Image (cartoon, rainbow, N blue to C red; front, side):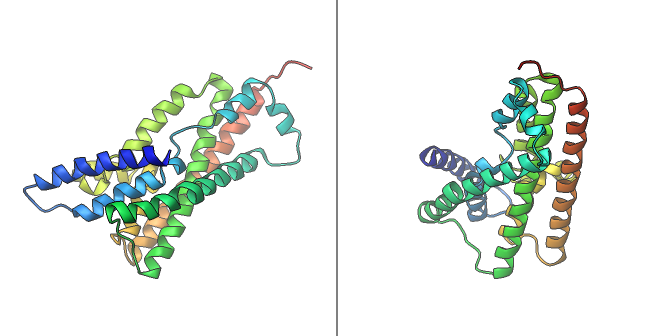
Length: 239
């Protein structure tokens, strides 16, 4: 998986390098910053809400959700903790090795300012929390659809684009940047990575973190609401 990760990182870096060699005017990000941005997206790829969680869907389809509901554990809290735990695993086993190799192979920029590093860590923690909340919200729709494949695929497409995963939002036209700024998805990629690159400093960092906190709480609330509605229509047969 790490080899595949670096293959796609190399392809994207070559594409951006070609664009920058053909540029006719200055860009908001220089080439080295874009390369670093691409390496960051590949490093945290598995942390993003792009893949779904089939075990959640199966819990409803096979009726095992009934066993979870009778346990003295908050259902949303259980799955939220499970999502965060998986994200931490991927950070340790995939993100950190990718950081090291990206530094060696692509000369990825690493900030030395402790404030930037601390702000980035907090922002990524909020991005992971938002990912967990989003996954649970999508999963909760299975109470009505019995299969989250279509919704998950649609959500993944929207998230991949408007988070700035494919192309940094800083390189977008101004009007499209404003649209992205009104959506929650920039908190998954654009905001934490902009902090990493030092593009947000001082009050701008607090504004970015505040937006992330708002959307984390919003998706937690939405997920809980949908789950409560779903529990009312849940029917489990068997014995």
